[in-house]
Length: 435
Image (cartoon, rainbow, N blue to C red):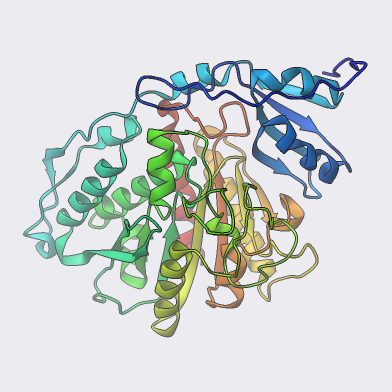
């Protein structure tokens, strides 16, 4: 719709944050808009802070129209309308969408009927109950779930730690391997929830991990993949931010790092990688959602993830790196720092990405756009894909943006967790079979 021009710009009021009994921001009265900016993206971006709007995501690539998805508080709606941008309403009331996401459910425990009985897993405990994927869960329960996954596959897995967060939490993960033995094969390295508000990512990464363990003995594709590659999986690489989204502010994105030079909190870990760090698509403003930090690689989370990657590179190398994100439904290949640079094997990567998207679509018809980050979505200097491609030496270095395309965005209803995992699983099985 085209907003009617208001004669004078109404100054936005300071947002009075409303909280519930648990101290969590409610987002009552917030509306979510998709704002069509065309070639005016920089000018619009400069107005966001004065509107007290939340920058959810944007598309500044060469495919599709350029737009921002923003959540505007009720105090700033008049000022936003006065800007007279073309926009669509994605959500009339963000608080209502949060309610549809569902409450955090307790860990359902183990499924005593589902114990792996292969010779290599004679000591296996029961797998976690699959109803885990029917709801979102508290951070502590994710740790328990991961421990129980490992216990169900004791001869072929171990818990790993890829560093420590700013607030002192371990970046907890799991290492899986097949018949070749621990650490004997090239690595497949997965990260989830680097952006705190992207809850669907850790759930899907956990679903894929669950399926790898469950199907190792009865699916030839899975068995061949685990026998040929070691998986290193860290479902939540921003635990401080993740906890903050569950206790205070659901739409928080960055880590929770404080700095003496500013009162603003948080750095975007995925603009902090020490490669092409200071380019377009990252911000020098500490209050920005894409704040890159004071120096390349100066977040503790990035340091831990990077050191773990270096060990994999110096070992058997990295075959595939995937940084799991939401939302938008994209499979993104290098590069983010440049729209003209091309990876040496860009043709192979882009072809595999397109075909993986087709495999995903066969399940429910969910369409994924594929291509290089910068030209497909937006410039993103200091991102993980570029680092893993050119520094860590991964053969394939991708970011996958999961469901949806904006209707629910980061607050995807819990009933979409399982379909998201199922379609991603089919995409991964295609990819592993066609490396």
